[in-house]
Image 1 (cartoon, one colour):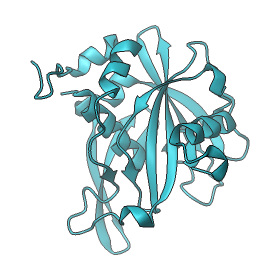
Image 2: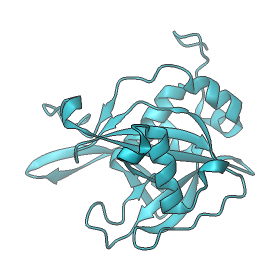
Image 3: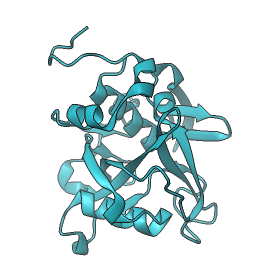
Image 4: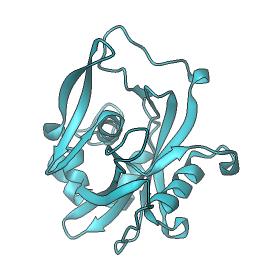
Length: 216
């Protein structure tokens, strides 16, 4: 059934048949309002835009035998910030990036997982996400070679792995969990997958991806 924008709504199972061309077409739609780590915490709001530091992540998609796969990383357990968490390759936008979120995402992906920018095709941009660590993160969706084999950056990336896009974008696999943080109950999104626990900002950006595509 068409949405109000005239674009058909996807059933979760349709993601398995999603082509790069259709994905790029859907990503041409204007990005929705920014999401935030505070979305599920009543009474708390994200900081204003001017107080946030710009950052970007790459959402790398590889064609597998059963559909598109998302490349993710597990951060090193020895890192000071977010040790052991599941994340997209990415980081802050440096001066050398010329203010470009895409340039920053590609640079970070090359450093973290050995992905050549020359072999990466940008498909589109998702709505930014505001983090509790005061970053405004822009997710850049990209096509990468089907035969890509990641090389983890020593000291920062513990593991590179893949999850089917159809699984990550299926609303049935999205959970809301909570824990007490700084004396306040904090609720957040979670997408468990086998031994992997995708949560927080990464899970929220994936929900934003599903929303942008119209997955229902």
